[in-house]
Amino acid sequence: EKALIGYRWYHAKQIEVSYPFGFALFAYGTTLVQYSAANAWEEGTGAKVNFTISHAGPRAGHEVPQMYLSFPSETPGDANSKPEWVLKGFAKRLLEPNTPAQVTFTLTQRDLSYWDDAPGRSLWVCTTGQFKACVGPNARDAILPDKGTCVNFQSTCTPGGVQALGPAAVAAGTAAAPGAVAGGPPLRLVTALLAGLLAGGAAVVVGMQVVRQQRSVSIHSALEQQPLQHFSQDQQQEHATGADSRDSLTRKGLCGLNCGT
Image (cartoon, rainbow, N blue to C red):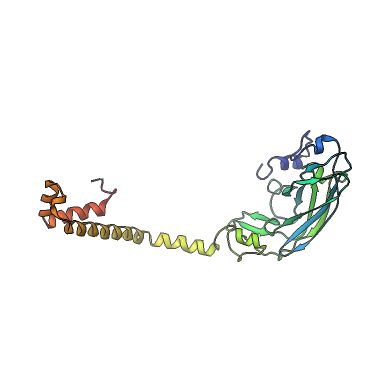
């Protein structure tokens, strides 16, 4: 099923359900909320989608409008990897009777990207072409003409550009450097680090041993500076043996958990 999970599966297979994803009764079912006047515009490297909700019922109620996004047909991938509709936003709003309310959703460049898992890729790529955003009360009604409201808009991505965005870049609405992994450092930096670890693995172990050896010398120096009356007779005897005890202590310090003695 790949990406066709939950409501995406029902959309793809055109299966009708009694209670679609996001379903709820507004104001205890006393009235229906009307969705209208959807429009979209560019905003930095992303887009914004605005629409109006209203109702003429007897009392106020909370509505949770949901935005579902359809990617351009040119988006690469097989059918199971490209859901027809993807939830990209929702918000809870208190709606008074006969008082229209404006709601705006923000789409970042990451929201307009697909995951490219081709060999040697594994990164987010911003999609070019025409998107369609639909808003409504649930996953089924949002895309129905008489229940939701929809708008088409063009992607603002650079054609063919790789847009691998980390958390900071997403928050700022800007793209990270090409060749970067989403949420992490540039791919070339990760590769360099891995290569360095493989080449310098022995040096890392040696460095650990040096640290342990320095620690053992420090411990031994501290022992030499302590008055003998603070130690047991066995400890005093070991201290008196001189170099042999120092070598024994050093070996223990170097071995640690590796020698088991």
